[in-house]
Image (cartoon, rainbow, N blue to C red; front, side, top):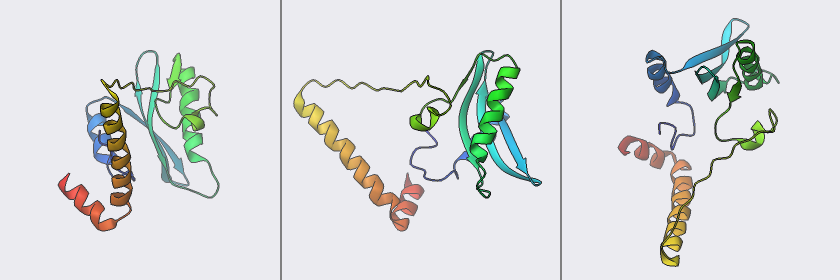
Length: 147
């Protein structure tokens, strides 16, 4: 819910801090030349790790997101975890790590064609309005202020 309508990670810090304070997640960090350059936020249970959010600074041509993810996967299996779940989204990227990709599907049933067409129109308008708002600094500022 917190990620909705954000194009940057400005929302993440307070959410991560709150969840971490409640003991609901863990944070893996990567340091390079004395500076924190990447982090990975994940959940853990007795069976596995559930990777939620990766963020990193670009340094030269280093693949820091890959690097921190690789080390967390290695750690999971060294600690006897059965699986590492990258959760939903970015499916094409995740295929590079494993060939077992689980897609999320949503089914919507309509009583008639009019209801279906209204839903499709609403979704198209929503996408166009979102592009207009995020493409205009003033509208974006107003949207974030009054949402």
